[in-house]
Image 1 (cartoon, rainbow, N blue to C red):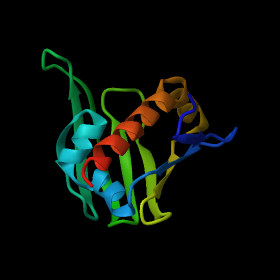
Image 2: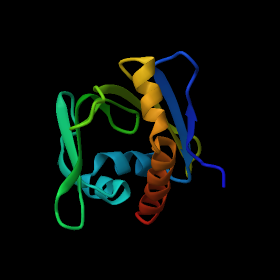
Image 3: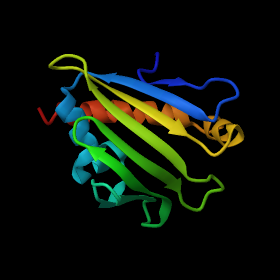
Length: 155
């Protein structure tokens, strides 16, 4: 089955362009990134902190069935314009990967559909390529599928 989330990785560049169209109104798509309870549902992680404002920050963590934290990520929000864009950093703690910069743009297509464009910039081409070696494409597509289902139930 073809993945609905598209990842464009141009050879020799240290960035990714990720796009996904959703069968959701723009406001619901944005709400899925804005409200901690909804983020936790579609990301399948605990939202420790989510301060949606300029110079705000966030932290997510995932635990195993025994309660041990197995993944933690965090970042700073540099720009937050409701229903339009979020600019933030993203760091995976306790990994060799440096912080990345993410530009998320939200676009209304029709009254019932919208589009997310993520422009992700890595420290180097090598780091970007290492990320692509992980099950990154599969993971982000699965997360976006869950986002679609969780947000659709909010209508």
